[in-house]
Image (cartoon, rainbow, N blue to C red; front, top):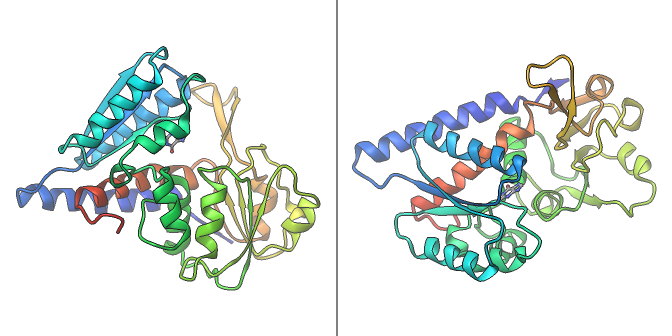
Length: 293
Ligand code: GUN
């Protein structure tokens, strides 16, 4: 059994990006610039955005945080998006989700210039990704694909079960893994809350991607010997044994499942650290104007 160490791989990629930014600076090029729009003060969103800004600074990117109170109108938010679309100094930007209920997320996402949509949420980017064309791919699926690549995990012809059909994780990932390339060429099943016989599907799968958000749902007896298990779940639960008073639990009962696996991601330290890195990679791509590529 081999652990897929997302923390280590993410640190390597961060170094690669930082070196590239150094070269850009030394040759007098434009420093990559990521902007983030944050509406309201939802605590997890505050944490995510602060993390994104911090990592940007660590690799030498420029970053800008644009904040609005949660009573902002949809029209005003679209105006702010258009300002960033037009701003030549901003290479890419994100609008942190979720947004307040009176604002339509699809309307906001569709107002983002697809060339600056480093979250890969715009329908143009999703459509291009599904077609296998160069596009910005959203952070978690891109991070998982990169982990599979760096650990050289075979995917062609293998049965791959993606559990969870969110627009941000499960749906894009199921498309990426079925594309005619590596990592891809897998026989993909996308399971969701209406799926019947989920245990049967898990047991016959070579690669299982758990993104259902149900702590320790997948137990040792549910998987076959030699399976690859990628755990996207992060549920925060109270703990007396950590400094913060909380710990993160994945969708997989790691101690039981790991001994049966060929590869497995831990929580924390697996998929999580890879996600922010993907956003940095997309921003670097956007800044080099190698659009969609
Ligand atoms: N909310 C949760 N994850 C994400 C993400 O990757 N991007 C944005 N914009 N919002 C999120």
